[in-house]
Length: 305
Ligand SMILES: [Zn+2]
Image 1: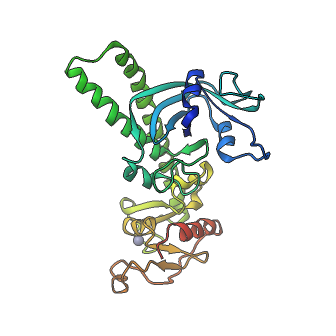
Image 2: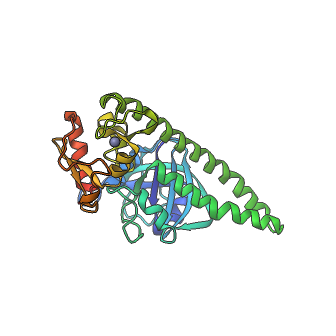
Image 3: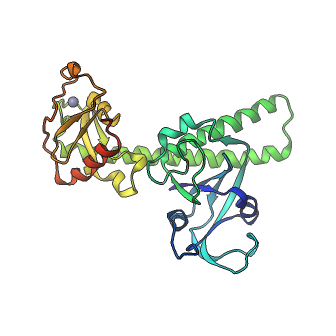
């Protein structure tokens, strides 16, 4: 299962009526934007969040895999029919939309650096279909549940729930719970597999301080899960086995390694404290050739010089 966020704006109502999302294959200049091409990745059962003018307004599940289809005749005023990508969906509209700006503090740490659906000011990016990693999926489902289910429950207490709403809720609840459990399972399974494959590459001990108590060791991603492609996510060379303290420093960008495996320490850390944390500037660890590309990415994007 892979999740997505679709940015719909004015096209939302027509696409919802038709029960689809659709994009042309290429723009007028013959270019193929990544957010159009991404429709091809949608498979039956994949969840999609619908973003319209500041809010997540609906969730849907793909009924079938994406297929190449002409633009459906019910969509928009068209002067010529175009070839494109189509996904048929079961739309579940939310009673209470989730406002992205209001919840941006919770959402923003989970956004990838590349192909993020939202800009730094919480406004939507102009493309069409964006990837939605598992952590972001779980967060969005949580926000949807908070604003939709609790409200309905309160209303139930006042005995004001009408039949229509009850039916809506009955179809939304399984979509939310099943999607959440699949996303959690995928993450848990992925992290376990990752750890099992990373640990032997570092002789089952912290690469920096040699602590070898399994309970204190963690397989850190150099390129974080949210920023990875599916392959990078489980690539053991994207991992580094560290004790919990050093893993914390690494993941927060307070230390980094260069292509030679030399340690770099952030200027945020005070030199007088290096010893407490067991850090020696430019200390060299022995790395694998395949780690280099990930170390460099981490040093460029995560390290806080
Ligand atoms: Zn350590």
